[in-house]
Image (cartoon, rainbow, N blue to C red; front, side):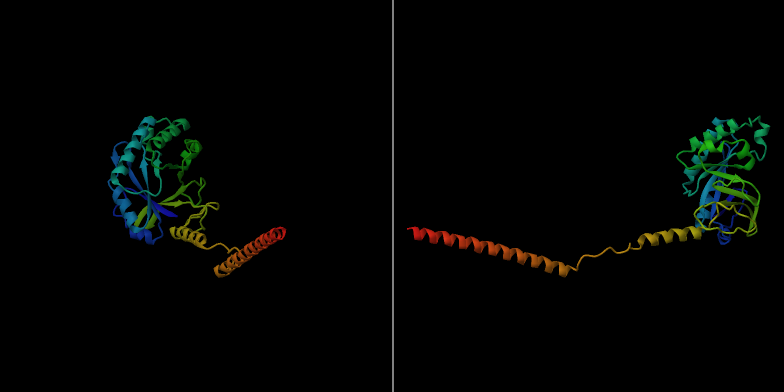
Length: 277
C-alpha cells in the first residue's frame, strides 16, 4: 500500500488527486512536543477519509527524558480523543533530531536512554496502538527496537529499504498534483507485488494496493460461502416413509401371529380340561 504523511506544512491537500494517483493511506501529524498541536490534524484525517484513504497519526518528539515522553504521549492522546476521529493505522512516535533541538539541549545520545524514551511514550499512549518512527541510523545505533515489541516505521531515502519493518518512508519528494509529500510504503506479506514508480520494493515484503487487499478479502469470503462437496445423501423422504411403514406392517404381522399362537394354546388347554371331565 502506498501512502503519504502530512502536517500543517502541507497546505490545502488535494485528497482526491492523491487517491486518483494510487495513494491508499495518510499518516497525519497530531502535533509536537508537550503542548503544540497541529491545527490541521482533524481536517487532514477527515479529508483523507472522505477521499477513501485510511489513516494513522504521528507525533514529533522533543523529549529529552522519559518523563518528557510520557507527557508527550498524554498530550498526543488528548488531541486524538478531542478530534473524535477513527484511526485505522497506528499512532507513531517520531523520534529523531532533524532540527538538532536535542543536540542543542544536552541530549544523551545513548542506546539505553533513547530506548527508555521510546518505552515511556509507548506505555503512556495506551490503549492506543503505537509504533516507532525513526531514520535508519537511529534504528541501527540508538534504538533497541527489538526490545520494544512494537511496529517500526523506518525512514531511508533510497531505492531499497534496508530495514524492512512495518512501513518505509522512501522519499521526501513525492510529487502529486503539483504538491510535494513524503512517500511511504506499508508492507503486506500476503499481497501481490505492485510496482511503485521510481522505487524498487524489497523482495520479501511487497506493497499492495487497497484494491488488491479488498479482492483478496472478497475471494476468501467467496471460498467460505462455497458449499463443501456433498456427502452421500439419505434416501428421499418418500422412500424413508415407505420403509418405516413396511417395518411397521412387519411388526404388526409378527404381533398378530404371536396373538394367534397364544389363542390356539388356550383352546388346546380348554379342550384337554373337557376331556378329563
